[in-house]
Image 1 (cartoon, rainbow, N blue to C red):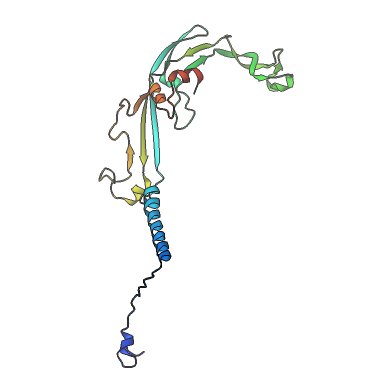
Image 2: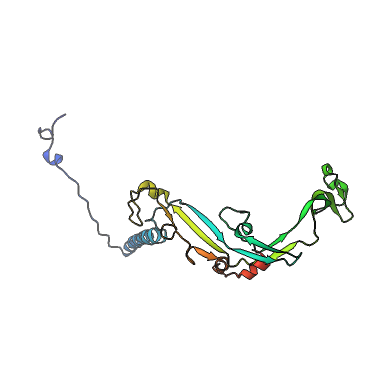
Length: 240
């Protein structure tokens, strides 16, 4: 292959370079179209992507947890069969029926039962075949299966209206940012030099119960409901 300086090629061609040519188009319609398109693109990037879509942020599927502790107790007098009973927080929040929720009872019926043969009012029937054959069940004249079961000892149970509106619920929560843990070398929020994992918890600065920060009564929580606050008396009477 010959060199560019061997004289086999023109030196002007060897050292040639390209320049861009600008063309000034004097047409109002084309000019308006160009500027309108540029304005639309810039507006979409600034308003749509950055301001509305927050495209400058990185999304992270976070992991979090919430733990609650219920404090309180009450003494109630039965409005059915005569009786007085003390209820602790453990009794009035058991069992936990849903993960992440806490239930506080506002009324409770207590039935005294024993094993025997009696009508099961949860099993209406019209013929004996609709009852449990293994328990020699029969259909009673009242239209219920009569078979071996737990039978009520009293016609009227003990019925307690529980005043739990002043029960306090201590809420503790934490959240972990997985992507920050993987991509960053220090806490971007507080400037902490602590190594990962970065788990942000309400216990960091508030390790103990503080009223109206992480400690609320049942009635206070109901009044925080949106869009319409709920009175404790309504829930106690009608149920949640």
